[in-house]
Image 1 (cartoon, rainbow, N blue to C red):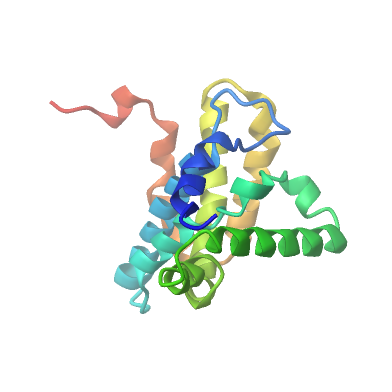
Image 2 (spheres, rainbow, N blue to C red; image 1 turned 30 degrees about the vertical axis):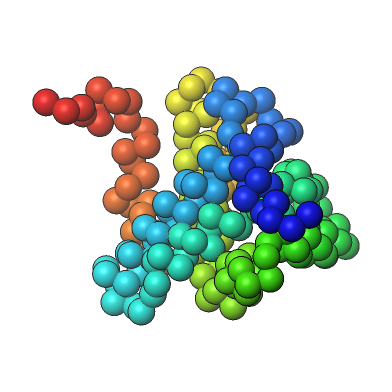
Length: 195
């Protein structure tokens, strides 16, 4: 069982997201985690460089890479089920905790502390708001992409997710929404290619 950690992580590509929805563009948790890391890093840079608030964007990106790693063992429980009641939410948090610790047990002892900080520890607490916001931004971008692909299945999720993002009252999120999300509406020709 030791030293299986990275083999488990490579299996993130087999865990699909949005299982209750018809997807035009299937997404797995590996792709999702990469995008959340990119977005968390961006939000951290915006926090630090635009708003002058001390922040470690690299730490936020690293935490984001691992934010759904428990789903390697649990699968992706759809949000409407996960948050249906406090009992289900609390039970699922316990399952996630156990899954994270099971993954950590697949590391050599000398590596466990560093990964424990990323997966369940102090770094996760420090970066939680950025990673949570990046996770929602990733979902919002997914909704935009599905709508652009002609899939109306995500229309209400798009409205709800944007509302959630605005209710976060995070200047970094508002800045990203104002400056960067309009480009997700463009096609490649509109974005421009190398001249």
